[in-house]
Image 1 (cartoon, rainbow, N blue to C red):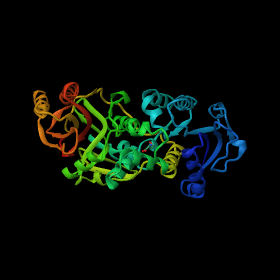
Image 2: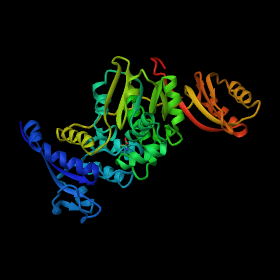
Image 3: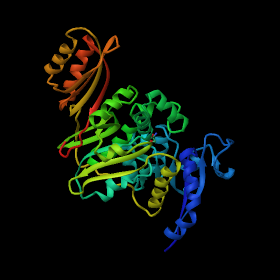
Image 4: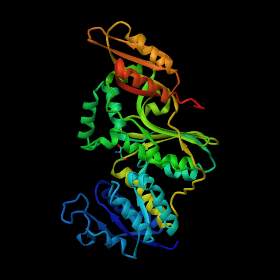
Length: 425
Ligand code: HSE
């Protein structure tokens, strides 16, 4: 086999870039022997040339000028590991425009600049690879765009953020509060010092936008994804869910019905009998239905330097072989559906006086929201914590009732979706 020599430019040498550097070094001989591909890292863009680094990179290949990579015709492959929307998205676009293939793990840059980046790659006939951008080491992008091409994918459920899954698992296993579980995640380096993107669902929404777009062959914009985070979850919610037979997960859900797509990320009760309920700690999993494949679940590490580098280096090999990147063909226009049907768990805090419960039930009833079960425990408290589980109801009806209840009768403490994961739902 003729040896392929590829000169590579790295953008960034943090956790992900450093992991890619180390894995390439470790696998160099095998990649050369097995694939006949020789990668040479020609330049590495860093912010600070003089910083101490965890990887031993020769000083003479470091640069603080992105032009040294983008304007170098010998560099044909760029590995973007800067993170964040900008300047990463701009650099990716400029690299593609310059005729270089790009491998990135950057879900935010992709989800926010999807159409322009894909269009630029197609126009220039170069590859844009992003397996590492969705669920780290899990090969979900290749599965959806390659291995499942003979399918119409109808629905997809994912635990696609490891930080929140770790926090919810801790809360469940140890009866910990959200604050304590977050603190532990930060201590272990799983959660960022500013955890907003993870705990408010933004990170998962970016991944869901990319996954749904690929799975449904229709552009699902980040702005069309409903998200609700985990910051209001209490041990009471977790334990009540368990009593009812559910595990609490931050679930990414997307479903296509005709030309309507619903895509949402929110705390969800998943039946304890479902394999997703057993995905705990910082692991990720994606569970989907293809009309021909049936049910399918992928499980693994969604973050971390080596798991992410595993996907990046595999993409580099695919790019070196001249592949075009994941096939993306938009075959239809769709409308984002924001009025899905679900069962709901609602926790309220009401004033403990006669008639309040009846008034709340009557507002729910007036909006067509039917109560399946209810619990109240006021003993020793000066207010009434109320927990309801509804039968299937429409999102708009639930929102309208909660607005009315919140204005007059009670504080809305938490809303959790109940996903029974039954076929056809
Ligand atoms: N912060 C993400 C997670 C990993 O916790 O899963 C990168 O997307």
